[in-house]
Amino acid sequence: PHVRVPTQRSAPTPTASPDAILIRRTMTEIGPVADKVTSYFYALLFVRHPDLRSLFPAAMDTQRDRLLKALLTAAEHIDNTPVLVDYLQNLGRGHRKYGTRAEHYPAVGECLIGALSKYAVGVWDGETEAAWVRTYTTISQVMIDAAAADELRSPAWWYAEVVAHDLRTSDVAVITVRPDQPYPFLAGQYTSLETPWWPRIWRHYSFASAPRSDGLLTFHVKAVPAGWVSNALVHRARPGDILRLGPPAGSMTVDHTTDSGLLCLGGGTGIAPIKALVEDVAEHGERRSVEVFYGARTNQDLYDIDTMLRLQQSHPWLAVRPVVDRHGLLQLPDAIREYGPWAEYDAYVSGPPGMIRSGVDALRDVGIPSERIRHDSVEELVVIGD
View 1 (cartoon, rainbow, N blue to C red):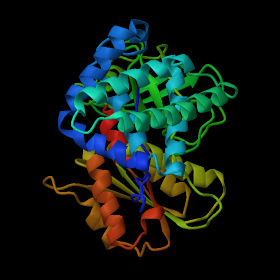
View 2: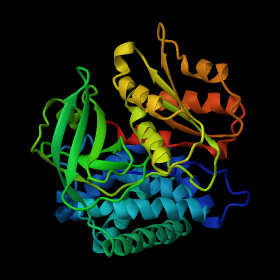
View 3: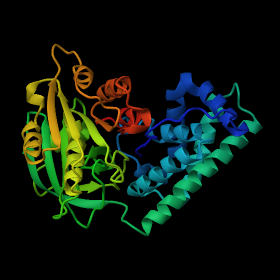
View 4: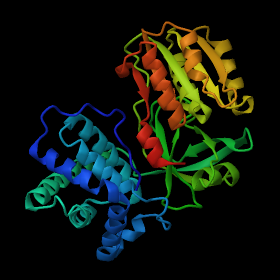
């Protein structure tokens, strides 16, 4: 099942706990053979617990190291309780949509220990195994508790009917769906989405609008090479099709307790959550400055520029600046430096991983501190794929 990793990696704890030292030593040892660890982990899981196979996609090549990567990421943060708990609670809530139950966790832990003990033989001993057992017990209990609390508040998933499918370019579609029951979320967040054509394969997509009075949800989807879900949504989905939605997640939301300006960088379909943030500011009646840089490789890729310019016409506090890369050069960082100053702005970055990395670097260069730069984790985007 799907992995979420912490939005911001924290600095290493100055004095690591004994368990954390043993955990990291194990991870260093298995680093060069991570693929073998992953394969052996799943082999153990499916041979010893064949009933769990149905929780995973039929084609495991899209699954690969997601579950194991989630466990190892959690273990790495074992000394950073706030980051760890937030991460694990999201993971626990998100795993409800796969049918994961509390009784499944011991089986996963047993096979995790089995795989690590086989491939970390150079450092594995009774003390190390005890550290991993304690760590996994902590990890699983936080996830189980979060799932149980979430079960009292919301369903494990929502059914949603496609009500509009607008093909904006040959590979980008704007898809609007109607969930079968109220779906609470915040502008700037994202959800996981499953199509009827690829059961148990979930992908993340940002909401392309603030919450609407009619309850409809909109997503911008770009079909990518070998992207099973994205290609199905762009080229196969039609009104009347039924999708499944997981719970909302993500912290790239507007802080309405401040009147700081917003500096928003959206690349490609990354403009979707930026549009939602603009609508959110408008609905709160705030007249705070919002500057949007809309990056694309070609003019055609500015598929939503008309919508953004209409928003600019309606709101005098909004400025929208399209930035098209020339000859493969990333123009967005240069455009940011050309305007400003930005020191008093909160920054939001959304788009492909490379664009997020260069955008964050450019924002730091112009004086915006890291704690005022919000984006969904680059690691998460890499792990999720499309």
